[in-house]
Image (cartoon, rainbow, N blue to C red; front, side):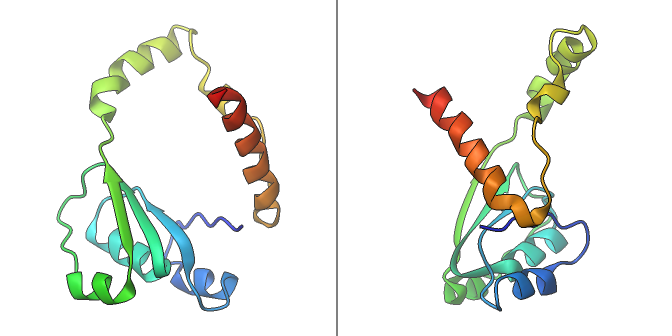
Amino acid sequence: MRAVVMHEPGNVTVEELTDGLGADGVVEAVGNEASFDQALGCVRPGGHLSFVGVPHGVSLDMDRMFFAEVHMFGGPAAVRKYLPAMIDLIFGGEINPGAVFDLVLPLERAAEGYAAWMSVAQRRSC
């Protein structure tokens, strides 16, 4: 398993990391035309493209998606609903957002990070 966080165009990086296949799954969390286009360019044929929130000004090339066999999933991100209360809890000292991240690994150890995340997820689902 490999994870890539792209802060600039990264289609070439994804192709290199996957021997030209593309990523099994891509999460698009920016919500604009350029980021959707890049995400679609990174996902492999038959792969999954997930998006968070409502994209703005994005038109999808349905032929491109159809022939690439890309599966799309999306859902709302109710940030505006929860953000004011979350900020109050953080500044009031009731929530420490830094406690969310307890393990930092380089990309080449992504599989180890995924295993750690899965062990926590399994404990929480029991």
